Each structure stands twice: as structure tokens, then as C-alpha cells.
Amino acid sequence: MKLSKLIVVCGPTATGKSDYAVTLAKEQNGEIISADSRQVYKGLDIGSGKITAKEMKGVPHHLINVANPKRTFSVVRYKKLADKIIADIIKRGKTPIIVGGTGFYIDAVVFNQQLPEVKPNKVLRKELEKHSLFELQEKLQQLDNERYETIDIHNKVRLIRAIEIATALGSVPKVDKHSPYEVEWIYLDHDDEVLKERIHDRLLKRMRKGMVKEVEQLHEQGVAWSRLEALGLEYRYIALYLQNKLSNQAHSTSLMAGMLEQLETAIWQYAKRQRTWFKKYAK
RNA sequence: GCGUCGGUGGUAGAGCGGUCAAUUACAACAGACUGUAAAUCUGUCGCCUUCGGGCUACGAAGGUUCAAAUCCUUCCCGACGCA
Image: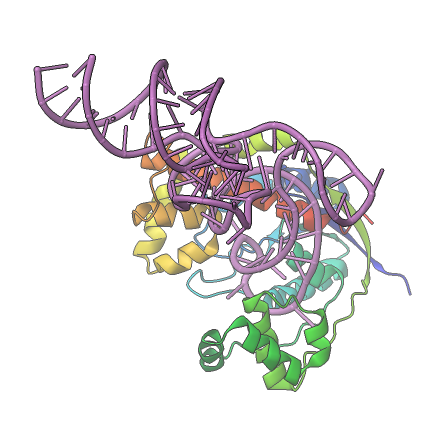
């Protein structure tokens, strides 16, 4: 059976994936499926670096603005939506191009990972949260020793989720990682120096565009501070700044400058985590 | 000028005679990833090493001691107080 072609454009943040993908889509008669865990949310525009209608240059973009920021989106929902869209693009004789920096989302779709559909169990989570790391480890070991052997036993979040799944299904199902597509990987990156500079410049640009105001507005529209903090990076640091929760940085001339300094560092750390993830693809 | 309190690893900041290459946090570097993934988590982090250990370190120089980041003296620097 001949596999359908799928192009993936990935790489750390601030490498110009979006622009690159638009050009590519034009050449390849493609449509773009965004793989970005923050751009799925409505209203997270400047801070997430969401592409504008103008920048799309007529190329259809999917999976942007499909979720309410007040609620958490999930990989599983992402995969479900993406599968449908990709099938449709292929049916119409066009090339699907996945573009984004969220490695987990890309993996789920490209390798067709059948992740268990166990909904968050708030009562259980609240209960589990009270337990120590060791207790959680024991609990998972009892429920599903196989999963226990492979999980990161220091990661409370993962342990709780695994217990949640095992409680609902009896055990945590194993997932295959076979791609149903003929995948063409395109990895974009820059040297450290250059990437750092790009991150810096882009951050200033976003500030000029009114990123702080965007966060303020989101909060006014009912997105809780805690939620904004959980969204990470720009949303997190600006939310902390607006709440005056940032400690004064010794070297910074102002609170705002200190916030930007910390944010820039966090973005760089994020970019490196992305690199670590994407290295897997480079064989 | 006198007085007081301080000067510790990239930064902040513990330690206040031995168990200190020095708690911790941050940064840095590497890595993990089965429904939060911009999240969450792990390892390394003075120099050298045949991984036993060796060497240089806590503002500087001396001194006391079997032993000093820790005590004493002088000097340099900083903050505050009195002039």
C-alpha cells in the first residue's frame, strides 16, 4: 500500500517555521496544520506568535483558534482533529504540512499514537495530590507494574495520570509508534548566538505589539491568573508581573526589565527542550 | 577620621575551628517524555584523575592551632552610624 505523504516542519521557537511553511505550502500545493499547544487557543495571539491572516498568504491553516483558553486542551483532542483534517486534505489531493514546535503533538499524529481516552478524574487527582511521591510510586506499581517500570518515577504529574488511567482501564495501554505516512522531516534551527538574538528581538517586537495588554484582556475576560501562569512563557511571566508576584531582580533597573530578562531566559530554556525532543527525529 | 556590620563558587545566599570543594536557590550544560507538554521531571555543575584519590580555593598578606571559610593582626573594598 502506498503511504500518503506528509511534511513536518519542526524546530525550536523563533526559527521562522511559520514563514517557511507558507512558502513551502505554495510550492507543494499544501495546507498547513499547526502543531502548537498554545496557538490552538482563541485569544492567545501575540504571546504565542500566532500567524496573522495576512501572513498566511492565502494558504489554509488548521488547528489554530480551536479551543477556549479557559479550559485545557489535550494531545488526544489535537490528534483527533488533526487526523480528520489530514485525511480531508489528502482526499482533496493536497499535501498536509504539519508545522509547529510542540513535539508531543507532532509525535501523536505522525506516529499515530493511540493514547487512552481517559478523562481527568478531578476527585481522584485531588486525592492523589496529597500523597507523597513514594506512595504514588507504590500505588502505580500495584496497579500496573509494566507501566511502573517505564515511567519517570520522580514525576508526580505523570504518576498521577498513569494511576488515573490504570484506575479507569485496569492498566495503561501500550502505544505503538508506527507512522502511517511517508514523512518528510524538515528541521529548522540556528546557531545559539543567532537564535538567542532572534528570541530577544522577537520578544521586544511582541511587547511593542501590546502583549501585556493582551494578557490583561484575557484576564478581564475571565481567564484566571493561575491559568495564565500555567500556560507558560509570555503568559506566565506577564501574569506574574501584572500580579506583582515577581521578585525584584538584583540587576534589573525595573520590574518590567526584570520580567523580560527572566522571560527571555525561560524562552531559551524552552528552545533547548525543543531541540532535545526533535533530536529524536534526526535518527 | 572614629565606630559598627559585611566581603564565600557565574549570581543570590548558608556555613562561623575538624565530618567543607563548601547546605540551598537561580543561572549554565546535558537528558526524559502514554490526555496539563510554552507543562512536568532527571542528571552534571572548581581543576585533574588509572575513579582509589590528587591539586587549588571562601577579599589580600601574615599569625595562632595537630587542624582555619570559620580565631587573631594589618591592609584593601562595601554598607550604615557618629563626626
